[in-house]
Length: 276
Image 1 (cartoon, rainbow, N blue to C red):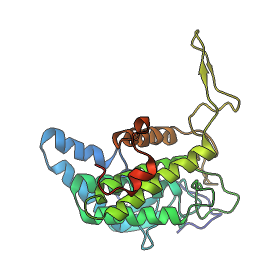
Image 2 (image 1 turned 90 degrees about the vertical axis):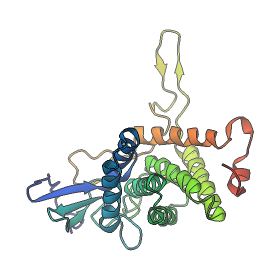
Image 3 (image 1 turned 30 degrees about the horizontal axis):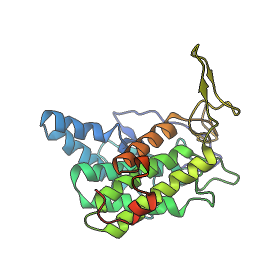
Image 4 (image 1 turned 135 degrees about the vertical axis):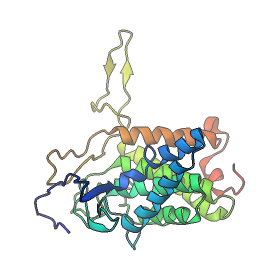
């Protein structure tokens, strides 16, 4: 394991010998693409590959305490060569967006595959994510990094969307747990909006944009794409498309749940066992 302070040799794959897999592979545009391929073609081999990879990552990327490894270097025979990070603080730390990708990804795989193990895993990952939140309620870039540590709003919006999926997975079999994850998802987004919302932008008749008093060009500020000190291009505390995209995805799902036009207040939905 690489220790803090050692040079980061961001190892390229040599697929004749070993290959790298990131926890990000669990999220929406990776394994879910394979499930969608099965849905569109009827060929179940795509979904089988996705489910097999999710099981593999469960053993390799998810640690016994339900924190996650960012990168796993696999030998050609599928055994683990090394666990490491590229965007987190160090190899054994808890990179918050990686944890969020895992919540989202396992909840999504559970919806697709109906495997209860994936639902249970997503719930444990979400519980750990909440446990590691600072008092502000906005996730830090890496929960193990020295303080002060910048936020990563994108980790919060990804995780919140994953918790919405947990609500759907659990509402029929475990309504109290479903209500908890829905409530927690909204609390997470509320905290992020309070701490990270940018100033209102405006568009004039000529099509020129004024970005507001703070100059941010995103909906949310305070994300961190990569804070690793050995990265050739560390970028911290900035706007990030992931944060905005998953905030909008979260909002779209909230509308489907009946939160538009004040029809249902958040606390009523969260306590209800019958919302579909």
